[in-house]
Length: 245
Length: 86
Image 1 (cartoon, rainbow over the protein chains, first blue to last red):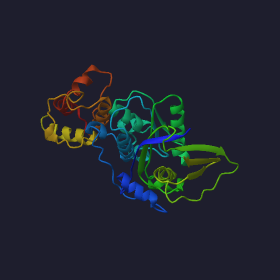
Image 2 (image 1 turned 90 degrees about the horizontal axis):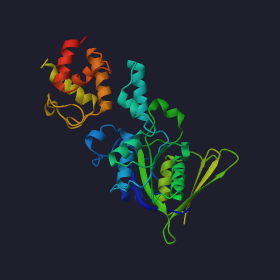
Image 3 (image 1 turned 135 degrees about the horizontal axis):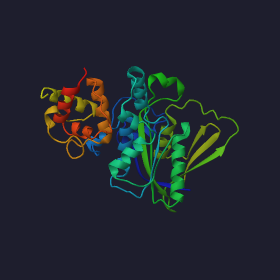
Image 4 (image 1 turned 180 degrees about the vertical axis):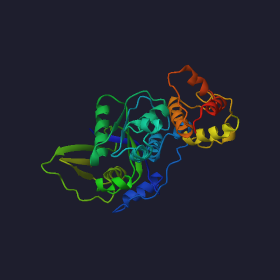
């Protein structure tokens, strides 16, 4: 399937506007975003916004930018390798030190809680998915979107986000860590539309892609923003190929 | 019991992460949930846990009286003044 991007948005500390990201993507080796800036998320009522931590604010900020008007018929795919891991970590710390957990923190600690907060705030009662797929998380999200489009969805919103792992977990993920989120609103490309495709093939051994300079999810964003003809991502025993058409 | 009201207000603001709300903004007689401050059932649970930690008061979730104790800051303060263990 050939996909066309109708809207795109991205946010990381120091990279807040689309022109910032286009300059970032055009560099031969784009730098890892660093910093603690968090979007203000003024679109969301304060009473709902208070339930979101950094990961949620990042994700909902870019989602909202791609859907300034409510579109209840457009399904959303929220994808994050580690999810709201900072919240989970703080909850476990509290459990260890105080022997109890906050009901609110517990209720918000599932992988789909951020997608759910979005659907509540936008009053969307349709389909959403929350997925995680290791270093192929962005690829899995776009694959899910293709399925939804093939099934008749008029468009699909894909939101990819992550935040750095808490220090105690850092040794478990060799990829570089950054707080970022990006969103694309995807439609099936018409004959004259610019577009891209994504395909996967099985490979025999774990393909060693080396250590990427930025998280895999940001390499995918860079492909989507640039004019590159192709991006290949080896993840486990799968070779993913993004191609521009 | 009136002396407890500012303390309870501060606890609510802190526990519920209510940005931009000052203790004086909360009317001690206004409903805490739904139409008043706009808190919901998750907040009720959270507040129950916070009050238990701070004052050692225990709420029986099934009792009809809990609804009355949680009606407003004033009602909560009265209940805690009478039942606090710490």
